[in-house]
Amino acid sequence: MEENKIVPISIPGIHQAFWPWFLKKTDGKKIKVLDCGAGHGAFTKKLYDAGYDVSACDLFPEIFYFDKVVCQKADVTSSLPFPDSTFEAIVAMEIMEHIQDHEVFFAEAFRILKPGGSVYISTPNIMSLKSRSRFLFTGFFYSFKPLELKNYDGLQHVASLTLDQYNYLAVKKGFGEAEFSFDKRQSTSVLLSWLHPVMWLMTKIKKTGNMHNHWDLLTGRIIFMQYTKPK
Image 1 (cartoon, rainbow, N blue to C red):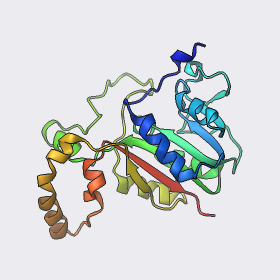
Image 2: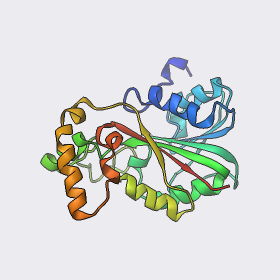
Image 3: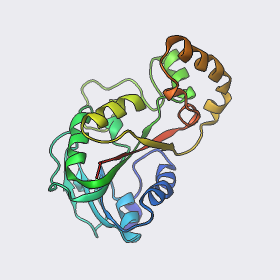
């Protein structure tokens, strides 16, 4: 396949922001990595070219165009086709919003990771001020819209979870809580920052804690999460 067909299937700019974050988290060590939900193979190619020992899987391996790596067919809400303790890192970029059985995903990620390994996730940040305002007025979070009720191709955004919910599911399956970051700040969310003091006061009154009112969560566009398997 022509190399120019190997393009990211994601919101523009995510790969460019995720890459330096991933490099920093892995200290540039050329570890064994699974690109889970690899799409056309754009990030697989980036990992391969950088010297990582990379494997790939996707629900639709027929659209994977990078011929240096074999992409195995895999449903991330079912058993993954890899032995226990195979990888030191799993990349799950822009797939969590497409699936519903996240417990299975975290259980399988935990199984195929080596002790001390991590799963690195990116997904739309529904906790941003832009997203919360959009939900208030439309009933839909940022990057979500009404579902086509008879479309089951796996490409729609069907799951909108908070950081707290992701932590709950991951910890239940054996991981530690997330270390998180983001791709870039949303200008709309920054403009809405005047709401922050009101939100801080409400968390005090309701005694909910300030977890979801962290500045990076209030202003970030895409949330990056790292979940690590204990050694």
